[in-house]
Image 1 (cartoon, helix red, strand yellow):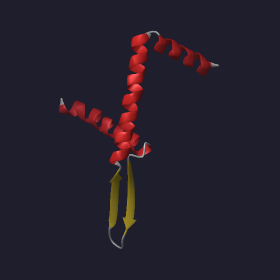
Image 2 (cartoon, rainbow, N blue to C red):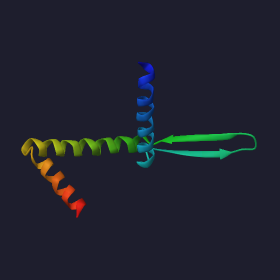
Image 3 (cartoon, rainbow, N blue to C red):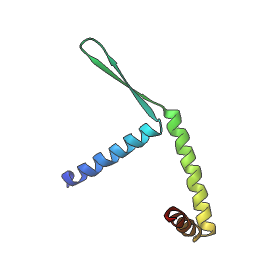
Image 4 (cartoon, rainbow, N blue to C red):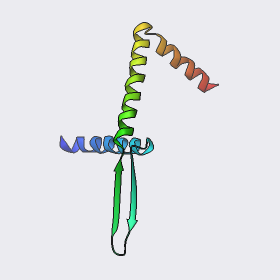
Length: 86
């Protein structure tokens, strides 16, 4: 059971790490000394929190839109698919 979950866990970690890097949630810097390498990771908690708030607001907007008109999201997806195929 554990061996089956390990690839999934590693995939989720890699996805979060990649997403965080592109959203600039952290930076990695490397300093070379004579016989050693220093790696510094800086995590920007405020940026993560701001992106979390933006995501919550968007999710609430879509939730409200879906409650008002459940078919609206599927119709907009159809329009987007038609636009992409043209």
